[in-house]
Image 1 (cartoon, rainbow, N blue to C red):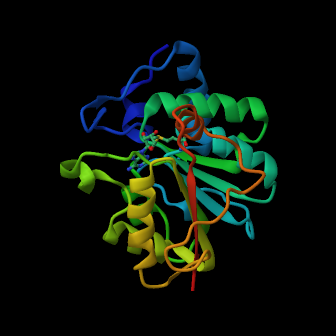
Image 2: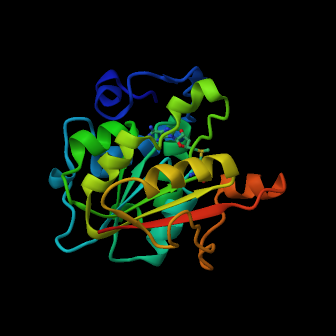
Length: 233
Ligand SMILES: C[S@@+](CC[C@H](N)C(=O)[O-])C[C@H]1O[C@@H](n2cnc3c(N)ncnc32)[C@H](O)[C@@H]1O
C-alpha cells in the first residue's frame, strides 16, 4: 500500500527535504496506521484547530518537534483532560508516534500535523488559544552561520506568546548549554513572558518528566539538560 497523491497533498509536507536532511521512509505497516489515523486526528493545511473537534473546556497543549513521540505519549497518559497537538516535520517520527499513540489508547485526544511549527502557529492556531507549549531539545544548529535556523528566534517567540492564553506556559529543554542560553536570552527579552526561575534562571528538572530520546542521548554523552519555564503575563 502506498500513500496516495491526494493523501500526501493533504497531510504530508511538500518539501521532503528539511535543510538537506532526507525526510525519509516509512514502513508499509506505518503507512497503514497513517492512513487510518490522519484523516481522523490529522490537521491538514486547510484546517484550523477550531475545526478539529476539540472538546469544549479541554486545555490545548502543543508540542513542537515531538520526534518519535516519547513526550507526547507520556503527556497523553498523565493528563486525561488535555487535547495534545503534536507538530513534527520528520515523517518517520510522525509515523512512529502515531503507532505508539494508537497502542497507548490515547490517540483520539491528540491532533497531529507534519507541517512546520511556524505554519501551524500562524495559520492554524488562533491568538490566545493555547494553554501550553512544549519544545524539547530542538535542533541546536551549532555552527554560527546556521544559527538563523534555530527554531527560537525573536519573531518566533512573539508568535508563541500571541498564541498562548493569559497564564499559559512555555516549557523548553535542551541538552546543549549554548542553545539553552540562546533560548533563555531570547525568551527573557520577549515582552509578555515571565521566567518562572527569575531572570536568566533555569528550573529544576520536573521529577515526573519522561526521558526523551534526545535527553537520553545528551546524558550518554555526559550532558545534563537544562529546563526553562515561562508564563504569559
Ligand atoms: C533534536 S530532535 C528532538 C526530538 C524530541 N523532542 C526529543 O526530545 O527527543 C528535534 C525535532 O524537531 C523537529 N523540528 C525541527 N524543526 C521543526 C519545525 N519547524 N516544526 C516542527 N518540528 C520541527 C525535527 O524534525 C526533530 O524531530
